[in-house]
Length: 505
Image 1 (cartoon, rainbow, N blue to C red):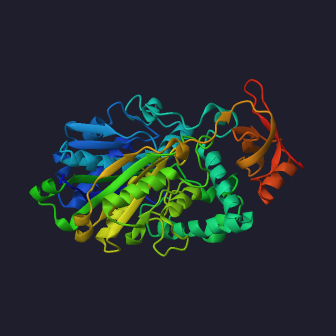
Image 2: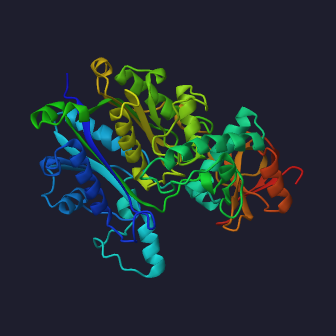
Image 3: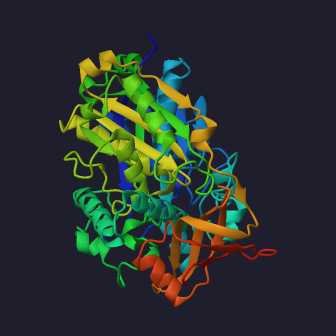
């Protein structure tokens, strides 16, 4: 049997002015280094940060590095590691960096890995507004470090029609979910608020949450000055909050190394198994708007490696940038919204805070703590990147019986084309069409400013278009179901968007 991987220490950080003292910007490499020092202390062996032979890095949006492993090592006051790697940008990176470490350990490539990530967008944004010179590693503001080797978030047609940001892409998934379930807008909004109010309860008890104040269902559902509508149907308190200064890290090592170094077995949390897979890349390119075949495939593989089913899991942490993706995980695992186990250990990205690519590292850290504290024996943590595109899952345990019946493997799965890729996207369509999904984008004063449609043409192909932006149209789309409505689309010229005219508006 290949060498098994165990997590022996975790560390987290929140640096929110007012809750954690005055604002003192800290460079991302130093934030992660501090969390790694906390993780080593958590393992009972502070020297681990110097004994580790590998560093796995989760890229930050706020600041990048040509040599992230070397930057973390320098912040720890040690030489560069023998092995270093960096995940590609995406919210699955926190889970994936743990799975990467487990695979490298199983292959005998490394023994001890320092893995972690952070986000410092709060400090980056505030420094820009206040004209503060951060003095961080030169060149780190260059975005090329973030998206190297990876497609942009949105395709050209999506960018032309205003779907270039997650706050407008994910609502299109949610509206499709609601329409398929045949719920009214009011009933569905209340369901989402109920889900996120439970998340808020967890965030309130989490000392690393950016928003530790409890939010009721009404606080989350009702729109107003403090909870403006962003992209229908999501008000602000259903959106991931990215402008945070938060970090998390873990130390992953082989059982042999843990034994040799005298790490107490009470600190070990074993990787039972994991997997990753990829859906169609962007919202207009995916095969399904109401589910994730990639998450389903990764879940099946993870359960096979771990020797478990969903009923065996005591502790869940689902990625939750927007409610749609929590529902994807629930659907894949056949879980009810009222499942007493709940779906977050952190409080979720809207309440705990959404530190960019590193959020699911917080999910791992909190799941590890939950298992150690006896709140269960098996944990399940999942993350995703882009528009619910890239999915990664890891199962963890402190149960010897579960560990013995698992293989610790990690799978990378390619979906069949028919489960991954949606219908062809027509750039300049003309003719009758039906609404497959849509959203309405609001400005910061909560005024609707743009409608965005994902359409099905008569021949089954897809197209994107904007509406006419009239008060009657906005009311029609936000007060009654827009999915399934018919109309006519005309092509835009040059950089102008296609235009969809709803029948009856």
